[in-house]
Image 1 (cartoon, rainbow over the protein chains, first blue to last red):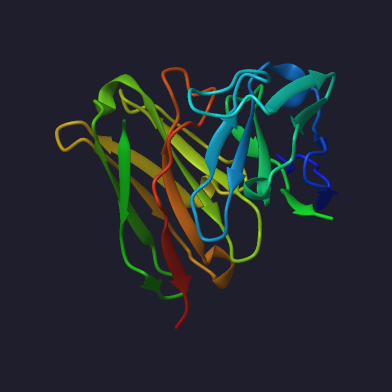
Image 2 (image 1 turned 90 degrees about the vertical axis):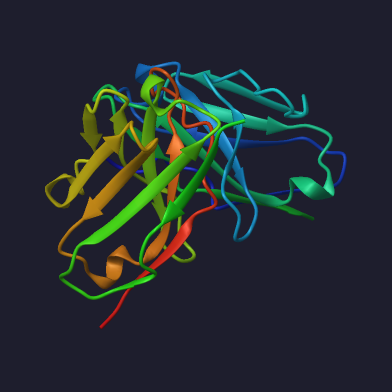
Length: 110
Length: 118
């Protein structure tokens, strides 16, 4: 299974909205509504931010939202804040009952 | 809230087998799926495998020939064995909970660094 495709980096100004894409195939992103997004700071474990494409775990800011169209899922961060600077990874359950992660996107301020 | 703690050797030799254990607290291990994920230095996340509370397993196809996962409900812990190690297996290894149906990896351990070197 190949890693899902994400842009290497996305930049934005404080207060702006940014969107990170995650492109897979009909065997993963397009085959299920089980796409998750994770936030990771340097030398820290990933933190679940979105699950089942659109759902936020308790305690995650509503500035984070998810969507999906076909084989591409997206994470939108609205009202960009300094603490949002981090790496973000998507993940999908697959039709083979395995998991596959995206290549990762670094979010930075302009 | 569930907590996970990895343990194992920080340094292993090429061609040897890596054995890692994950101790779970504040949750009964039998009712969920549990997973291992790794992250090579400066690179992205790679899913390795999962095990169910009943012992059923599934592995990343690219690692399947070298990986074994097991679960010990009496000790509330699960384990990973990865054989025929090379330098490419150097990574931070995370254990994580995979939920009741394993559709979402939700809670993660802090990770343990494993270096493969002679």
